[in-house]
Image 1 (cartoon, rainbow, N blue to C red):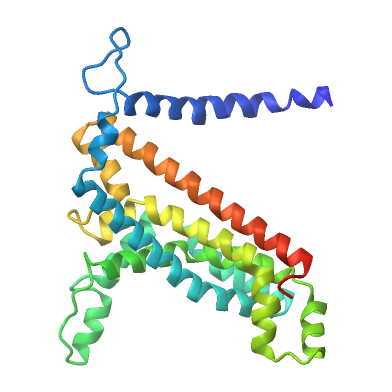
Image 2 (tube, one colour):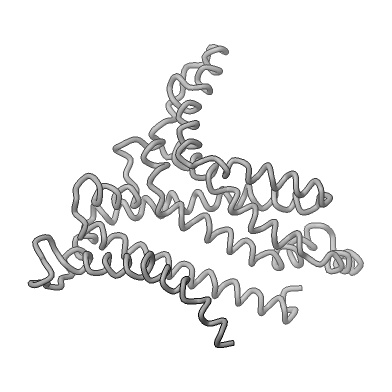
Length: 281
């Protein structure tokens, strides 16, 4: 076994250089203010106090709202699609999953630009409406455009996670449920959905977290004045040059993400334990 431990060394070096070291630098920036240098380094929580200004709290709440709505829509659309795919033949499942993941082969920036040509005032949708004599609808730079872009980009993560669990489900459990007199709705509520909750929780995590921190979609579909937490961090680093405050926001977001992942894992483990004990079936 000791000989195999050497194989971990490249991975440990890689993690140290590209994960641990950058996080340490962000921590130092977050705990210092402008004008500090290595010799006269003074720690301060001013950057964290600044974040709790009502203006920035409003940005965080708006980001949480958009991310929550996006996650709920992805779940409502993704679960039925994943279930339908899992009920098809193996060849058809492969084809349908390929179609689901195909847009992900294209860069997110390109996909987001495509939505601009669709949703703009002179875009495809408004041109079609104009053909029928309907006045143009304002869609760009709204919550609708941002949420639509997020759902489009992150929906495959929800579908794939739920499909993976549903496709591996033991069919004998469903047959046993029908043999015991349960109808389709009862079978879904007491057997299928509880057993697929691990995929649902994983899907929610993979959609909610990037929706909360993304900045490309709000920037292009929401306009320059549409600011979410990801855009706020980008502005601090690139436009304003306030690395200290930007690092503090990044650190706060990292903590929120870690806490969310912790509760998601606990919920997943709790559900798995209950299902294994037969408490929900």
